[in-house]
Image (tube, rainbow, N blue to C red):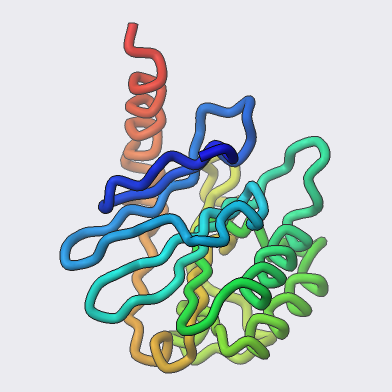
Length: 199
C-alpha cells in the first residue's frame, strides 16, 4: 500500500508511524478473529492503524501510537485527529487502543477534552470503567515507567471502546517487578534489535 501499510496476512496488519523509524504499529489477531486494512485507511493519520476486525462480532479497531516527530502535532492533538477520523469514517462498534503518551500533568486539561469527545462518540476507557473511577480520579496502576525507573510512573496506554463492552471488560495491568525489574523489557528490546539487525 502506498502509505507504508503492509498488506495484512489475516492475522496481522502493520504500518510504520514515520519513515525514518524501524518501529511499526501492529494489530495482531488470533482465531477466530482476523484483521483487514480498513477501506478508509488512506485517509487516516500516520500514527494510527485502522483495521476491520472480522469474526464473531466484527468491529473497527484503530491502533494508535502518538509520537514526537518533527511536523507532527502534540500527543493530545494526535488523539483528537484520531477521533476526527473515527467520527468521519466509521460506523458500528469502534475500539481505539494503544500508546497515547497522555495524559501527563502538562496535557491533562487537553486530554480531558478529548476523553469527553470520545465519550460523546460512545467510547469509554476500559481501565477507568473496570475500576469504576470518576473522571477526576487518576489511575493507580502505571502502564509505563519513564527510563525504566519505578519513581517515574505514568498511565499512558489506553483501550477505549463501546461502553457496553468496557463495562464487562476485565483489565489487568502488569507491575514494575514483572516487566521492568525482571529484565523482560531489556530482553524484548534486545530481541527487537536482533530482528532489525540480524548480523
